[in-house]
Length: 167
Image 1 (cartoon, rainbow, N blue to C red):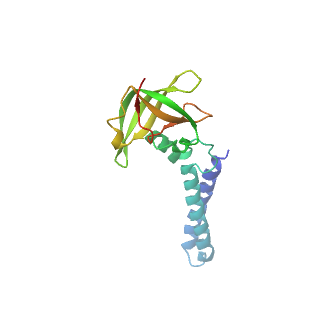
Image 2 (cartoon, rainbow, N blue to C red):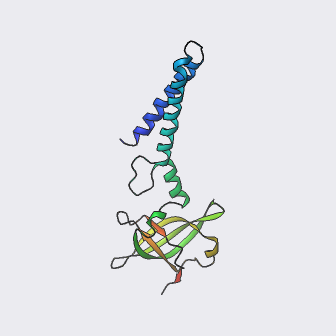
Image 3 (cartoon, rainbow, N blue to C red):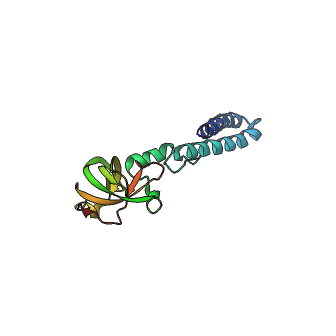
């Protein structure tokens, strides 16, 4: 329901915008056309921004069109670092996605998450790989990760801790 509010606001804004253009087309109706146009423009822009960024009630996970795009490109989940559940993960496979963000490569990782006191489980994850770590991050290495306590499949690799050999 909350996701429909920004769309409804944008639709009302578009209608008012069109009405304002009509109102400004004549000197006799210009007095109401300009304010209606301005209000419509404001509602349309606000509704589109709220819908695409997911500012209307996201609960931790990235929402909205831009939020989902961040997850796909490997730039989401960074809020988990330091606030999620710390763990380690074994890199079982990795491949280039063909995507770059600010000239940094987005890599698809197959990980075997090894939570403390629980059974390991597999996760497929996309994240930017810093250029300085390209030679150090290979299958068979163990990386520090932070997982979402509500959804263990959602994680972020912490590149501030260097990858280690699997022991």
